[in-house]
Each structure stands twice: as structure tokens, then as C-alpha cells.
Amino acid sequence: MFTMMNHDTCGRWRVRRWAAAGLLVLAGSVAGCSDGGAPGVTGEDTVDVKNKDLQGNQRQIALENLWAEVGSDPAKRTTARETTKEILWKGSAPVKLRERAWSLLMSDATPEGREDTRNFLRLRLPTETQWSLIVPICASVAEQARGPEGAAWKSVTASLVRSYARKVPVPPDADRPEREALLALHPGRDLETVVFDVFVRPAENGAPKRPDDFAEKSRTAAWELLGRLDPTGAKRTVLAAESTNANEPIVRDINRCAKELGVVPITASELTWLRGLMDEKDKRAATWWSQTSAAVGRLTPEQRTDLQMRHLEPVRWASENMPAWVGASRDQLVGILAQRLEGRRVWRKTEGLNLGVETSREALSENRDRLSWGDALAMLVLDRALESPSIRAALMLQADADRADTSCEHGGVIWARGLGGKPAEGEQFGVRGYQPRTTQRVNDRTFTAPEEMFNDSAWSLVHYHFHAQTENNRDYAGPGRGDMEYAASHGRSCLVFTSVQTGVMNVDFYTRGGSGGPVAIDLGEIRSGQ
Image (tube, rainbow, N blue to C red; front, side, top):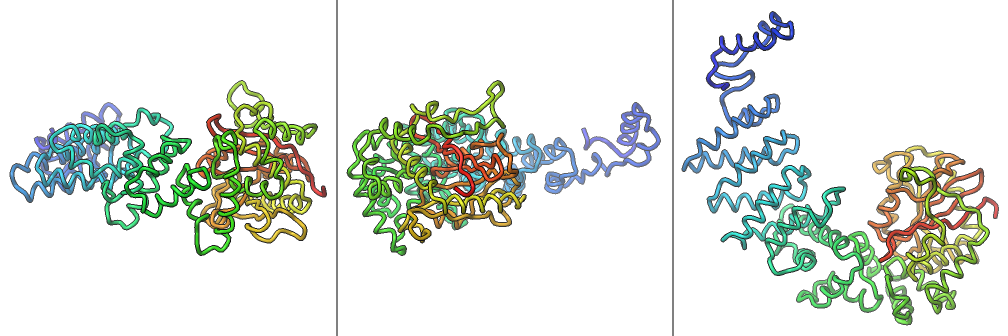
């Protein structure tokens, strides 16, 4: 339509359109068209496609023109492809234009064109966020996988895994388009096996050699995805043991962890945690590993149920200091904990709950059936640590500092004597506070743990943070959604200390839990000077 209009026709057409708005004179005098086209259209298709000031349909017409002129001319095909990939690379381009760009790119069935498309996907798909594009891309990959060139398309496997690893509210994992594409690329193999293979051999599954970090990002994403597909780690334990790459350092470490400690890291953060525990440069590593593996080796099958990395340090400490706890069953530990908590004042969270729910469910009795043996033991050890006056005093001072700092929340770790540092004289436990770096400060209701906190806390008992915005912050006495996501992502036992009165903080323990699901339990309050 635009290319057939001359200047006069275009001007009269625009006057008619604007006349209805009462702007006949202004529109006719200000607006104009370039010769042979709509306003701003140059007729140079490569220029018009990239012109963000043009309407989406105008840019699409230019893109269509580029492909219509390709024919058998290699130079024109290259121009059309490069221009199309540029549109696809820019997430800011109109959605409809990007969707059409993908269709046109896939219309090139030449061998060199298909190979170039696969190489493009390997780089772009891991960071693509528009579902209107991810869905057709995955559908195209699945279609190609079932065709005569299916083997060649396996080179996008690692990129599909990286895309799949991103958490999204919808669709659920079972309905993700990446899942369909991965299963089509690897018929006869279960998804966990395919993703584990990307973890072990990212380059062989298409992770580009450049940029340098693509292979490591693919490996991290694969393990993160496996954390959702295999939440207990049971499948990975088998896959690692049966892997033909058993001599790969990371596979060897996972196998050793499963064999000697009875657990495997679930998330990518826990995998990094495991590497810290096995750091041969740290003199504490061998001592901790020896003590912990010996303690785990004495556990019963019931005690090992849902055992995870966050339980290992409590097991090690209790084996040396409270052997009766380690010898107790889950029900016995819960009974001991119930006795310790009896009579304590608790503060129920009321903010951020679902409609119709007045208070949170944080009582031990409300979580009893979801507790694993390991989580019950961890709470007992932490409750013991919080009996220390020096620990409480340090936490009160940190809460005061947090309250004065409105740019973020503060947090830290609690650790046992001998591994995490030097506690106060005569103390079994120590505490260390951390503040987010300047670039990590989001707002006064967000705690972003700095990297050094993770680096320093390989042998810690717990991660904690404060809800101390005001001295009376009782409505927020408990973990929020972001806090529960933190516990799930990092696999840590966590505490949140909430200021509820002057000199009083409520304590809540929370974790992602095991097969029973997430757990949040109110441990009562601690007071200044006690």
C-alpha cells in the first residue's frame, strides 16, 4: 500500500484521516512522506527494518521484501539472514516482527542456512525471555529433531537446558516447550539423563566454546534444572555412579559425597558449597570431612531419610557434643524440641498471607509431620546456640545496625567452635554478620547475601537475616516468600530474627524441607540482656 502512494496522494490521505480529529490544517502542513513511501520509509529495506521509529508492520514489510529478493543470490541471502538475526537478537523489537523474523529464518532450508540458524540459537536461546518466541523456536526444534536432520539439531541441547532452567510462574515444568524439544532431540532417553549429560559434557551438547563461560553456565543451569526434576537427588546419585565420565572431577566429587556423606547437592548453589567443603587448600576440609563422614556412617536408615547437605554440620557437632540426640529417632527429637519450646511466647506473622488466612502456620505441632530427622536435629542445635548470652548480644547489636540502615536488610551465619572461626572464650558457637555490597542493596526489606558470606560459611550451621525495620515489626515475624525461595535455592537452614518489642526479637527457623515440603517453625523470642 505504501509504495504505490505518491506524495500528493499520501498528503490527501493523511488530511482525510486527521480531519475527523479536527486537525485538518495542522496535520496537512506538518506531516509529509518520503518519495514513494510512507513517512520515514526510505525504500532501503535493510535500513527500514532496523528503524525503530517506523511502525512494526512497516518494518515487517521491509523484512519480507528482503527475503523476497533473495532468490539464489548468496550475497542477498546473507544480508537477509544477518538483518533477521539482528531483529531476533534485540528483545526490544516489536513482538510480531520478531515472530515473523523467526519464521523467515527457518524458511531458509539450505544446509549452510540451517547450520547458521543452529549456531544462532545456541547463543541467543539461553537469554531469550519472550514466550511468544520461545514457544515457536522450541516447536521448530522439535519438528526438525523428528526429521532427517535431527541429529544435527542436538547441538542446541545445552541452550535448551539453559532456557528450561530459568524459573517462571507459568507454564509449569511439565508443560514447558523446552521439555518437548529436548525429548524430541533425544528419543528413548528420560529427561533427567539428558540434562545430566549436559552437566557432565556441556561442550558435546552444544555449549559454545566462546564466550569462555558458556560451558560453565550450561553446567550450572543443568544442575539447577535437575534440582527441580530430581528434588531428592536420588536420580542423580544413580546417574553419577553409573556415569562413563566417573573420572570427571565434579562427578568424582558427587560420587564421593553420596558414598561418604549420604547426600548429593540439590541446587547449583549447593554444588558450589560442596566444592568449598572439598577445597584441599583449606586445612579444615580434611578434618571436617573425616569427622562428618564418620558421624553419618553411624546413622540409621530412618535418620538418613531426607538427609541433605544442611544437616551435615549439625550431625557432626551433635556427634561430638550431644551424642544422645544423634542416637534418637525423629519422633524422639521432635519430642525433645517440643519440651524446649513449651511455654515460650511466639509471634505469628500476619503480613503477606493468603486471603482468609489471619496468621501463619509456624507452630511445631503444625509442621511435625513434615519434619525430617535432620531438620529436627538442626533446630535443636541452633536452639542450643541461641542460649548463649554472647550470641544474643551480638545479634541484638546487628539488628540495631540493620534498623539504622534503610538501604537493605543485614544477615550472617552461626557456626560451631573449631571450624567457622574463634568463638568467645568458653563458647561453643560463634556468630558473624554481613552487609550486602553497595550494588546489592535493593531496599529495606531485602537481604542479598554477599559472595564472601557464602565463601566463609561452608561449615556454618545456619544462614540468618533480620526483619528489624522498626522495633515493632511483629506483622513480619516470619519468613516471606523471598526468604523461602532463598532457602530453597541455596539449600540452607535459615533463621529470621524479627524485632517485635524494644530489646526483643522473635526467632523463626525455615528450610525448603524434604519430601514433606517447606518448613517454617517459630522458636520463640530472645531478649536483650539474657
